[in-house]
Image 1 (cartoon, rainbow, N blue to C red):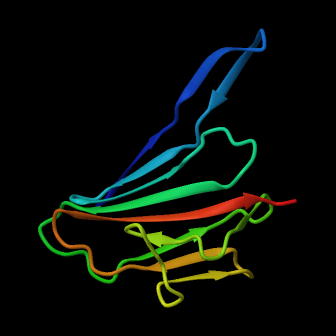
Image 2 (tube, rainbow, N blue to C red):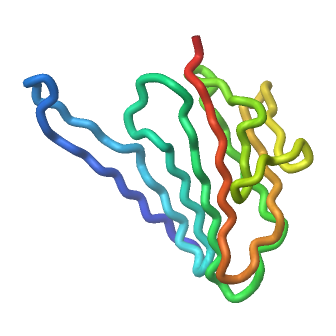
Length: 130
């Protein structure tokens, strides 16, 4: 049976002479022996420009991770997905490798098998809604 590890970070300080507390999103790690996925944004606090997400799927297990598919629901009330911004292992993804469904706000990315002791890195961008 798999377990989940939940973790949140809080930082307290002064900003513009005002006591300020900021809190990270909850980081959830599913504890499956040898398979991990980590998603990070390139900015913790975002004012302007594009926001880039990086998803890393790592296989440290004993067998290949076959036919992996990433499903990412994007909060389109705040941001919009940037078409043609998906990269898989630093290579621009093709239309066969990913799809963004506007109706469900879901980005689906089809990956190649992930061999033992390797990782696949996916990047994509969003921008603030006007």
